[in-house]
Length: 212
Image (cartoon, rainbow, N blue to C red):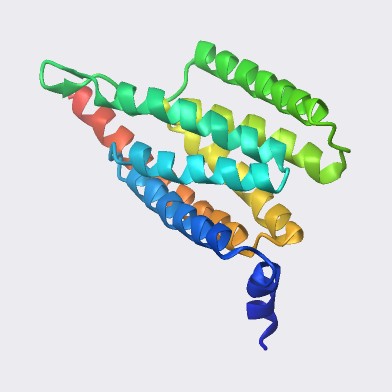
């Protein structure tokens, strides 16, 4: 068989069918969520919740607790983001696309550190023997959670963080044999780049209109 197909299919030969089905559902809704995010569509959150809740379970089954915590955080932050994006005042969205200010950068850095500390603690709690891939999990968990918080507040910098962490996650999941998820994060990377330029264009247009 073609080596590319072998790479994606071999890890699933001995995997239970229902787990493969769940991963496929998470794959579909995960992609849909990022597409909606790029379009600044609130459906990013319900579709994202489906993907993250399923992924929490899959990572728990495989004892990937850093990834599990990351997706648990996504689920919580998705609920906050859903509420925040839905807020309307005087027939206008309360939360608009903007850049982070100094305080928001500081809050993001604190979230980054706290998330890494909590993720490390979860690994220790479960008695997991840590190797370098687990430390990568810990790092990307901090980046992803900060990106999620920025997205919930429509900060342009969320896309920069998504791109950075996605690029790290693609080879990590490939190394672990998670072919479908590795492909998903490769698609996420492309969509995140598109999302950055789409949001930046929207922000630039808003600033031009306000300066007139």
